[in-house]
Amino acid sequence: MRRLQAGEDLAFELLYERYQPRIFRYALRMSSSRELADDIVQEVFLGLIRGARGYDPAAGPLGSYLYGMARNLLFRQLGAKPMEELEEDSMITEHDPLDGLARSEQIERVRQALAAMPAHYREAVVLCDMEEMSYSAVAELLGVAVGTVRSRLHRARGLLLERLSQERCGA
Image (cartoon, rainbow, N blue to C red; front, side, top):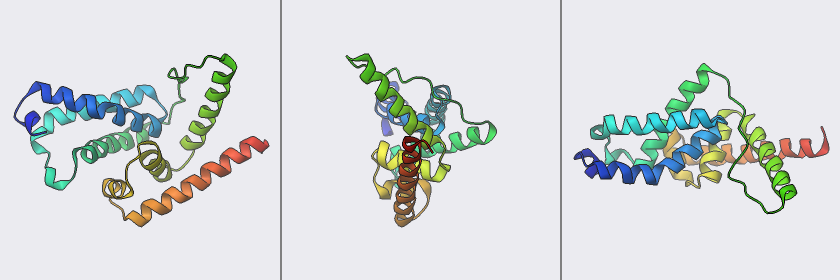
């Protein structure tokens, strides 16, 4: 980050390569829209370029700073328009087309269940379980206590399990 603040172009490329996939996954999982996730990533990194001198390492790690930017942008965008449907996941490549189809359907059910959750629960699952961030890092990012993160995550997992069980039973 110091190299970026000093104006070194290669530093930006390295930061982008390191953090772009994480920020994209977070934005995609929170919004269920590839288009919006791409826009969020672009805005986060444009903001990083514009505000590189304003980043203070004493305030927290760079990753938390970038997730915070993405989070603020997402909530601004999602407040303005409804969530969009996910496109098919083109990352799945299976040898047996039927196995791939079953897996795609299962992934889509989980995505729909996740998208239907209140944002504060969805965010706990995305950051802790999918992005594998520590409870303390998530607590710092969200500005809540670690216990709050734990309770949101516990409740969110329960809601996911309940919703997926209902779908399986046809309720």
